Structure formats: structure tokens, C-alpha cells
Image (cartoon, rainbow, N blue to C red; front, side, top):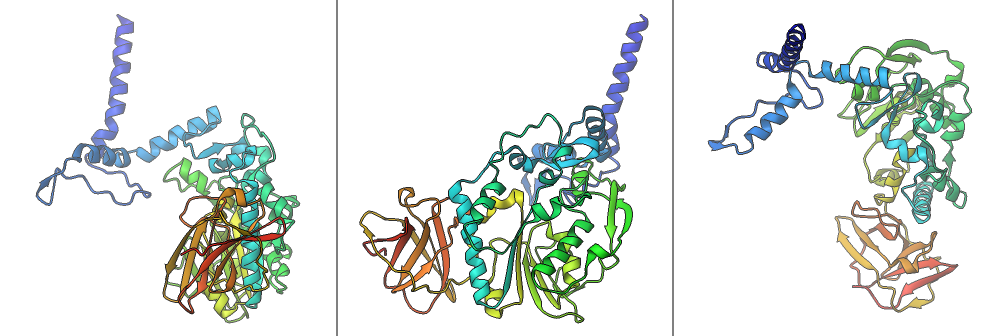
Length: 457
């Protein structure tokens, strides 16, 4: 009898706990920052029956029920602290409170997502950008920001094993030796430091890592910038990392230290958007000289304040494809491309917006009758956008691709042009000076340049 009473009390308590969110939601809606201010679904819309009403209501309730964030946070804390696991499949819980982005697991475990041809395509794309920028009078640097577990893998959980070292970065680094690229090796630079320069609860570096990277970048661009190695930053326990926020929605309680050099807010924005998270940000500092364009991803967020303090004019862009048209026309002083390790394969997917110059030093020979590639020409206001791909059998790992148009020879970027990864795609922008009367494709392989024998309309 006593057991039945206890069971009954237990069932009533559990039932009551399940009802609490429902009952309280009737009078108080949980604010979900990621979803915005959601509206209650209506049975009718514009005088018509809403046939997806039940589905809409289910979605609405699942994102707004009372105590939602608290319950998710409680579950995440139990999973993290007790079981050493994550309740979010985008996050890996590591040792000593470290969190990692699950998107980096392929790189960490040595599972490449690009081929040898793809690695060569990336290297040649960067080399071509560098050449055009230098011909326009700009200094150029390319750098790859390491994934957090590439530098601090000792904090990864023991149950996630490495299979090999054949990851994307290693493939690209190896083939870059065959190309003339001004490469700033952040793996070596940051890896040689004795202190931790990434955040435990974030997927990026901390302010100190960003600041000393800025110092080294200025040195490599022959600029006399601030030496953040000589400045002792103020340490504040006030930081909540992006991974922490994903794991514990709505949490504002600080999770770890960050570093401050005192000039992080000394930025004069000239762009419409005044936030380092924006796709495009422009700044001005009248006490400095020179102009820089930096193409970056989220790793650039923390470094923006420090670089903005070193140049008179700065433009920071997250947009892809990289649009280098302004840099090419103006001949800005410095151009930097930064991309995180986990996004390296994105360099295979978009043709940079930059007008390729004629290269009539290329000698064409060895016609191939059946070299028939797909070709598409898009006419834009002041340029042609030419894209296509050629059969795999005519392309080696490091083959270059050219387009011959109206007697002029232009090298194409070995990139996919439709958002799909394709090792044998190409694309380029050329100045529109006259109508195209004939166009052919050529491929450099084994020291020889092979060309389609017939004109491609």
C-alpha cells in the first residue's frame, strides 16, 4: 500500500513537472533570441484556413515554452559535467572544460574532403590573386587560421581518435611549396607560443592571439605597427564563447578570461554597419597612413580593432566569392586573405571577382580533337563571366586551364562556378572590349599546352 502511494506521488510530481512549461507558457512566452520574436500561429490567415496550423503551433511551442532555455541549459550541464558529453551535435565536450566545434572533426581525425587536384586548385587560385594584386601595386599575404583542436588537441576527448595526417591543411600546405605564395604560417607562429591563445569556450582565438597576430602581420607587410608583445594586457573574467552560448542558450554568465589592450573600442566606422560581425566593415584612422583590404571569416572579428588602428583606411569583408575589383582598380597598399582551416575547401567553390589580364606569353600547341569542355558565357555590364569544365582525362593534379578569346589568352581560376565542388571546373572574368567571335579552351599538362581544335560557340 505504501509503495502504491509513493508511486502515485511520483507520477503526480512528474506529470506536474511536465505541465509546468505548458501552463506558464499561457501567461509568459520564453524569449528565444535566435528565432526572434515569434508570433502565435493563427487558425486563419487572410480569411483562409491555415492548413499548417497544427504544425506551426508545434514549432511555435517548441521554441517559446516557458523555462525552455533553463531546461536546455540544465540538460547540457548534466551531460557535460556528469557524462563529459554534449547535447548539441555541433559541439564536442573536451577535457578541463574545453569545447570544440564538431565541424573540425574531419580535420582533426585526418579525413580529407579535398583531393590532390583540389589542393593544387586552391594554391593556384591564391597565387593568381596574388599576382594580379601585385601587378596592381598591392602587397599580398595569405594565411590560414588553425582549428582550435589543431593547436590544442590534448584537450580533445580520448574517445575521438586520429586516423591519419592526410587532412585538408596538410594537403594544401604540401602543394603550396610548388607555388610562389606569400604565406603567413599561423600554425607555426601560434604553435610555438607557450601560452594558450584560443578561448576554451569559443571556436576562435582570444584577443591576445589576435593582437600578436596583427603585430606579426604588420611586420610581414613592412609596417611599423603596435608591438602587442611588449604590452601587458588587462585580463578580465568576462567572456562567453560562441560554443558556450550554443550549448547553454541564453547564458550571459562569464565563462572564462579574455585580454584587453585598451584600444579595442578606438574604432571609427565609416560603413553602414558598425559591428565586427557584419559581412562588410569599413574603418578610418586619420592618424595613420595607407589602406588595407582584408578578406576574412569569423576569425577576423577579434583582429579588426587592432588592424583598424594601424591603417588610415580599412575594408574587411566576409563575402564570398572574394570581390577584388576595387583593390585591382585602386591599387590599395595591402591585401590580406585569411580563412579558417575548416573552410579551406570553400576556396574551390567560388571564382574570385577580378578581371584577368591577357597573357600572350603562353604558346599554344598540340591540338586535341576530342577535348570538348562545357562552356558558358555570361555578359555583364563591363565584363564577361566565362565558366565551364573539361573532361578529367585531360587534366593532371596541377594542370592549368586557359581560355583563348578573340586571339587573346587568359588563365582561368580552377574553381567551381555554380556552388558545387568540381576539381575540373574553371571560371574567370575578362574585360568586355568587343563581341566574342571565337573562344577555345586550352590545358597545360606535362609541359605542353593542349587546345581544342574546333571553336566553341
